[in-house]
Length: 454
Image (tube, rainbow, N blue to C red):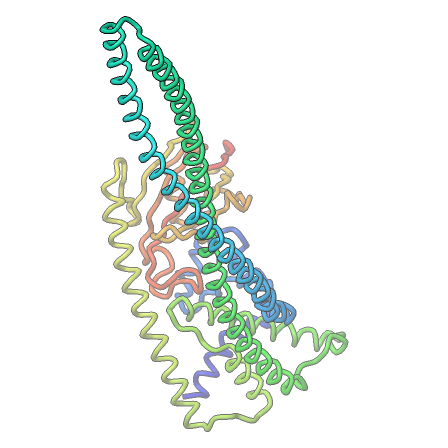
């Protein structure tokens, strides 16, 4: 079983060692637009895999990990400073509260004194008024006798005293009002201070949470660092199998290295495909298996290797079948909604389309046609967007694949349409790893940039 799988793998990979880059789709142009006819003639299993990304995955530098470890120390210092400031704020608040209590006691005492003074003064004023009336009556009765004159003098003095008391009462009331206003202002200032202290407490709580999160990140960073160190140690132990740059000077070594790169890229494509199914293999263990194969020393027995490979293939097949069913359901739902839109029609080939703009001049069969295409999945995920990437496909109308040649036939020069293509007319049950899942319904927005008269 293992030998059969190896033969299948190398039968797919070895042609890549001598093949040129023409097997891959041009960057920015949908694969289905370039060699759809070859795709259907050769079958889904023999289609060249999509050209993987040439850029290598950047390796995170160890210095980033060091900075993550040092960062919590600065946070702890900031936390201590905030705690110290909070304690000072709390002490200041207690002093302000004591001052307010003292002022409130003084205000209460002054209000009591004010209520006691006013009635007494008023009663005194009323008594002197009655006395004045009595004196006036006596004066009228005895016609200003010496005693009456003396009483009159006493009344005048009493009026003067009352006036002085009224002035003092007014001054006392003004003073009380000022003190009450001052106490109210102090109370407002204290309320503002209390609000600021509450905000400081909230900030302290937030800083505490951030410090806790930073501590958790530090612990996680240490774990990641340990894992990376372990991975680096494992790779260093196998580094004897890897040549340095100076050893790749001869054509034989360069060709062998290029074949290894092609194989590595295909492995990366395979991993991305499995990841799209929800299966994420361990890259370190996978690389160890490749190196151990060339080294001739396996860490697992042949029986365990066979069982593990069978389990892996079963999991991948199950995930692929589920993905295919999900894509079929999404495609059917999308087509059902697309058919309801005004102007939607079904082509003789079997795809649905809607002309967004018919265009102006007719396109002759011998015309050289320039088009741009936007390729998407039914969920809106963009696979290729020639307009955005600045790509234009220019070739005679007769050279285009039948699917797109028929679509261009519904347009005039500068026209555009949207077409929904079922899986059997697109990438089929196999899909096109890793971007296009199996059994995917494809959506294309096609626009004629220009067409000469032929």
